[in-house]
Image (cartoon, rainbow, N blue to C red; front, side, top):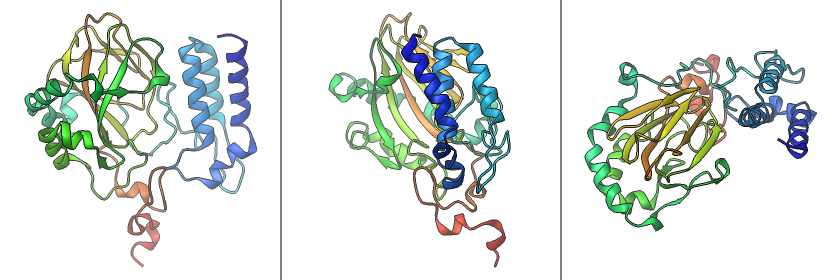
Length: 308
């Protein structure tokens, strides 16, 4: 929280108002990462992690008041459509239900939750065998923590199953191929719109507050093994605990953090990033591409041209 950090925050504020940054409202669509939303989010997270709450609140109000008078004008509240300070993804799809945690009575639209619990014995068996070799893990999100270890085994990313999935988890990988993608034919907004990985965290690790890139991605966690009772998950300021064989479904576009400061051993969970069930083809009308991929022509047609 020294002069260097404050200079960086001040530069970021100026960048958001720069004409080249604002031009993203003309050059990019709602399904792409625009400079003003990205840097407002980055600055907000930095302020929150520095416990500069008042500065964060002020910046949030500035973001909400941002308007753009260009080729594609944006009114205040439209340019940056966030509704709460702990829910600031850089890509925002309209009309999606926003709940930090999705209770079990909503899982009829999240079928993967019950499937993961049902097949927990298979998942646990293969993970126990694979985790005996630490070389199977790779560092995960190193920029989010200073001390400890947080690593992963990636099974599915950018619409592709990894060699690790095929070779190390053959039975579970076969199941995943039946479940993903969850909405065939609907484009991914970002490469991690749906993603699967095992995450291992060692005792003493703390991961800072962060959030996902789009509000159409839900995080489905399955407690796998290790010191789950002493590990902590915070979503939108509330604390949650993992249990072996049980799922927590939550929205990764809300502020969240994890830690293992009270753990006596590793904490192992399975993460499935899953497309928000309210995402439909209508979100892509008039959009030719997302941040991740081209939108098929039959989906990208504006509503008025569909029936011509």
